[in-house]
Amino acid sequence: MTIMVLIVGLLLPWQGMASDTLAATPQGKHVLAYFTAFNASEQAFIDVHDQLMADSVLKKIPREKRIEMFTRMRGDFGTMTIEKVARASAKEIAVVVLTKDGAEGTFTFQFEEAAPFKIASIGIDVRG
Image 1 (cartoon, one colour):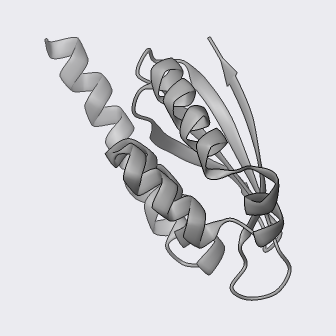
Image 2 (tube, one colour):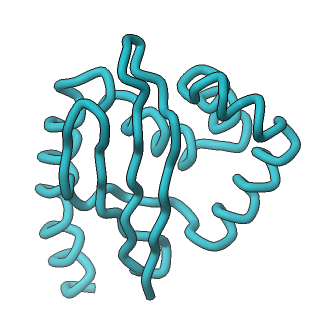
């Protein structure tokens, strides 16, 4: 029990710093919204996808496939916590996340170049 409290206590500062850093830009807010929706529910995730993903992405991946993707990812990863921002620019943000099983992974978001800076692609590399 003490070890778990210590681990959670060590992770919370990273979560706060990552959230503060991400909240400073429209692109970062999109990343936060993505994980908040993913951790909330299938409907929230699909709604955020509809709002934040580039039209080109939405045309390539029909709603049914996005639901399947959510179900598979949720089963594999459970809820995810942003551990830190690995790198950030106007075109790309990479965040390190922890999954339900304690596996660490990197989600790399590519953005359109013009406002509202919709998400053009997401690369996922989860280890563990």
